[in-house]
Image 1 (cartoon, rainbow, N blue to C red):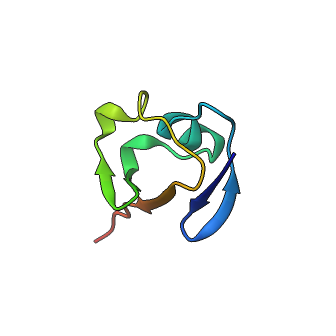
Image 2 (image 1 turned 90 degrees about the horizontal axis):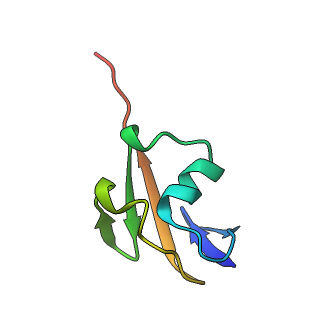
Length: 66
């Protein structure tokens, strides 16, 4: 199924969750925030939050430094 990931079309499997998307992208959940259709998804919901066709996902990476 097709979603919009950070502004670009992206293909994910049917029944994909936020967690499976992050795995597909090889992104660790601890260092990102995920927005689904303008709402922040709590990390505790990543495993159960299903994605639907045409969902708009924004993933923001936290960067440390000093």
